Image (cartoon, rainbow, N blue to C red; front, side, top):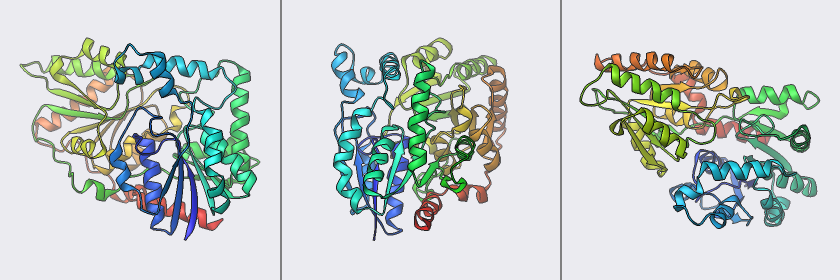
Length: 426
């Protein structure tokens, strides 16, 4: 039996796409002979909950919780006047907290977790064959950096999203950017493996750290488990309206307004008593998203379902015609493949992606799973939606089936099997 210490601030009962990657890594590594100790953030340290994910963990997994002065607690204390759900995910509150933290000489807003995580981890690190840390938050890597140095244990740093090249990282001054680059360099130099969730992010690391061995940087994508979707076969209605679904958070810089404009124009074009296109947003949405939906869309053409447990999300996917992928068009967004895309691949759903040219659009092209509109142009989105709607109304498939040979590369069993090989080869 091989021992792994896994540092992941976000872990069940926390929910969200990044949590799923961590849970599935731990679950599937157990079939390769790994026994894992997880050191995670406090149970109340995140506003998204999905306790159903706890049932996926192997019995051999030990989960240790390390406390922290986390943003959720601070927001609860700072604003007692709002409804709790709105308060915890208020875009204004989150932006204020991030801007405040951006000015501090710290890796991220979860920096107070580092010392407690190290204390909880030290014994397990001394007994581990490997340490693995996953970000965001990047504080997990700094805890692992210290542990790897003190115990001389091999260490894999897993970047679900880029650090210095992250879409949502804001650097108030050149000095702040230099500090984050320094911290990232510390991690990259000490780690034995640096893992990234897109090939583009791997190449970015290699180009910025040419003095490091090229094979230190490895591509470990997110993925899907086809067996998880077997109970929820894709079987939407055979007639209009065209039902579109987005799973995941619509927060920060993700802008749905061009899509809302396109949907409104189509519903006017094919005007009738009921809309020809409907959209369901499953996940947490900022107030600005709700406000924009109210401005452009009628009440019967948009549904806000909020955050749902994993099983309910899969049911929603199975009953919808078209899956929506929406990402920011900010600098460095070309390095990112949102985790929800892999759920869409697993569900074998046609995808409409509003993403910049880059990792996500290339994956869509490679797998043949849908159409990527690579600029936030409402008219182009409208024309693409019209094509999907015409196919539905004429009884045709919305899109040709994806390339199964390409999809096989993203089965989680294959992805984690590859990770096991990387760990055992070193």
